[in-house]
View 1 (tube, rainbow, N blue to C red):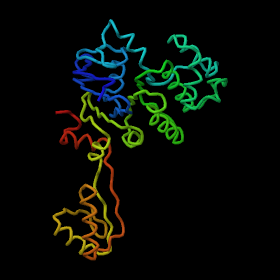
View 2: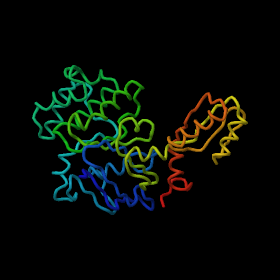
View 3: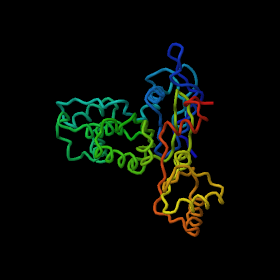
View 4: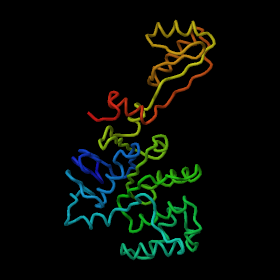
Length: 306
């Protein structure tokens, strides 16, 4: 599997505190990689180091298979698009005019403008002044700016921040389809796990500047699965069956709380409860919050990586 971006021991020290500490990341080609962590976890600092906006204290970065250094930094960054914090646009100019300015800075022909506007679904707004745009439209224009020149890696720092539900849904669909639409690998940061689950393939979780987890989304979802809440008509019969199965049951009355379990075991348990006359009428699985997943990954040490 080819890696579009890798870091080894990447660190950034401010005073006596590490914003990022010995970060080893691997972003596979052709994926949407979700970089997840609470505010202040080190996401933005990491992204700024990847873009050469912040100088690392230690460690190295490889972009597109090459080590990033002073000699090739600009050449590598020309193949990287980014949207950090909020897009920079001139409100009195049209979307097309804003993109012409960015195209001039990147040395990209104006013919690429229609292509990127089409990808972000703003082709009908090319002649409209950006000052009339909604926040969601501005964010999409910022992504269009980042896509000029057909970058191989697209770095987006919390692009759904401040958007309304409709804008968030639109942004999710746009980012999820980005590798297929334009061939770019996407690295996107967020502090919302539920939001990221709907658009990413690979996940990295960071807290206190350290990477706690990295791998496929399906592997993380095993950690995010919380307790199962069972509603039954005959709780005494249900608890008897659960005891025979060796499953610890909490809660009281008709609502029983069970530990997280895989689907195969859960299906077998429901069959046994039905056969035992428990009268199962409801089943719901809780999803752990990001903070709870941190505690699960670190053995309850508040996010400090081992």
